[in-house]
Amino acid sequence: MTTKRVGVIGFPVEHSLSPIMHNAAFAALNMSDWHYDAMSIPPDILRLGLREPKNHGYIGINVTVPHKEAIMEYVQPDEKARAIGAVNTVDFRTNIGTNTDADGLINDLRANQVRIRGQRVLVLGAGGAARAAVYGLLRAGADVAIVNRTKSRADKLVAQLRASARLDGAAVMTLDQAADWGMSLIINCTSVGLHPHIEQSPWIHGLPFPEGVTVYDMVYRPANTALMQQCVAHGGRAIGGLGMLARQGAIAFELWTGVQPPIDLMLRVLQETLETANED
Ligand code: ATR
Image 1: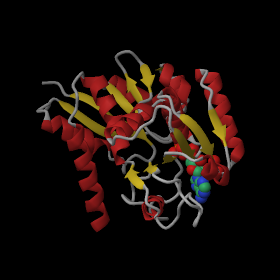
Image 2: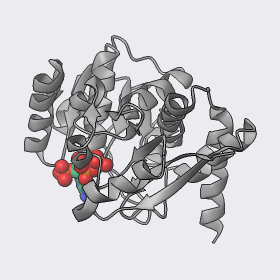
Image 3: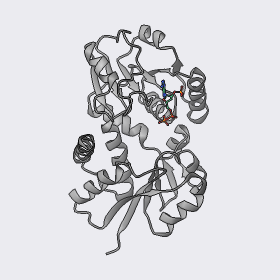
Image 4: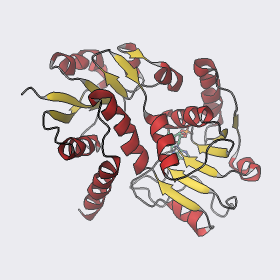
């Protein structure tokens, strides 16, 4: 029986949770001929490094930091990857690179019964994660505002989405303006609050949250961020970003295998792994 190989490339990549999540899904589905592993490829040898999984018959790979943008040169980016400006999943059988982050986020919002169409949504941040979020949200019919520490980067994100996907409708604001604008959903796409800086929040201390707002925090380490705690303390709802990680992975899993993975199990394995890591 030849092993059907998939994996993730990054640098560093040792801390990636993807192998645990995908291999748990293979085991649960009795797909013992499939295996997912992590490959560390330094950025200066990405082109050369890519030959390894290709020559060893890998069916596909996930791509993580810092290769998501650079790999676009060596694969055929599909419409989503071009719009988001980054590839996180490659199918070597076609050499097509796609991006499953936006759909992972939207699927997780829907799984949590968060309304998107026609809603005002505030995106915090203007990096790669924010661009995927804004793309997904605009496509899903939301009215989007972006707040970023560096305003010029948010302006650039709006211009890029207009150029790459003809998507209009995202406004760049300050946090005060956004609080007045009023939204039903806030998505944190910054790294603020990420372990070990768990006391930090991208929301100004004391600034009121709109009534009934939901915070979705892409940061999942810790599971309950300072931003999530602030929002709940003001009567809002908070959702951590682990579901997005599971769902972006699930889309890649299905693309490579043609099989729908057990998302609840993948999510549970991620939760357990992070809880165990916290005990160490
Ligand atoms: P990713 O690809 O994961 O989105 P990134 O491109 O490095 O990562 O983007 C990180 C985001 O977090 C940016 O929006 C960044 O703001 P700047 O554009 O001003 O750098 C934001 N960010 C990181 N640290 C921050 C901090 N201490 N305060 C506010 N925003 C921060």
